[in-house]
Length: 539
Image (tube, rainbow, N blue to C red; front, side, top):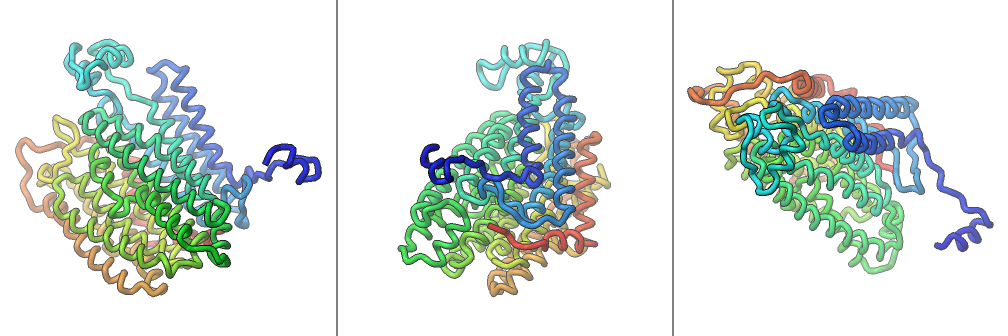
């Protein structure tokens, strides 16, 4: 509508939509802070950027957390704002809090420079030049001069690439917008805002640089296809409902006599894009390669935060827009969930790289999470939210531990290199054992409570056969977790095996945070379950 027609329709005055600044302040702070971080990269000398970026990122996350706590502490009613583009309800507040806490742990892992001198984000040519006193050859032709110019004189200490901090903040802001989006167009824009920085972050590894860049290219190409599916599905749903708002789609689906071809065709394409982002099989093909090739702190960030964002959005779309048509699409998602669980559990058994093994574990967990998302009930929503919280912190701590086991070539990610690790570092082996048992769903860990919550919701919603498949998949997946434990405790370490690096304060804090949350959610889950049960999604 043109301004003239809009003015005529509103009696001569153009009114802006009301904006609840207090409700959306956390998102504004994160995205605004990311813009400030870009200016820091542009204007500060390189040697000053790391401390400023780390401090700025932590202050931004703390400020967003405080504003979220102030808003949530007042027991606010659910609302929509920005022209109904964002919905701030109880699930949104819970997901925002989860993302901010996981983002804090991820920033700590990213910022650490003690595990690997100079940090994990630095061109390999610069590190070679520093180690050899200059003259190192570049992995890629034509970048040696640029690296030497940007990173100081040959023989000097390598400096971390700090552009990763604004990338992480932009991705986190996109994730927070993604889970709150109340219309599909806003959701698509948020999807791109969270995805593009991740594509770049995956290619910034210091070691195994070509593998890292290959992973980034694969992620980008497959992500572009997934975005195209999402956008085409959006177009079909707009053609069906005449609107991209989730509530309008729900109303059209409940009371329209139009053909359902556009509705279910659009839903299918839309869900493909969302399932790709959530690493749900069979739309998982990017996951093992990207988990293995990306820098481990970035892998931790993706594995924890992106899973939360993807399933938050999936649950909102299914709950708000497609509740009335659940019996038409549920059978297809049953098959998708089974495929994801089987792929994750079975192919995880064949992996020899621990990062790829955790990638297939995430695919199996995505199948479990889909049970909660398909349960269009308040119990299903609360179970899914709790599962995302528990899984995110466990996974974050797992990758923090993986980053500490190293040899001369960097991280020792081959399973054979973990043999006898308990004899080299009993504490690290004990922490890893506890985290793996949590991923397996053993009692007194958050994994058990999370699976129980999701499976109970699925049973109450009539999905008993799917729960049986999930239990079998959980038992199969437990084998490859136990295999790592047996390797660490019941095998002798190789004489030239890897060593355990003493973690710095940042990595120690991130791992400790993940372990404590995993333990507390397993022993006293009632507080988190109560917060997750605050109410349904609101459109």
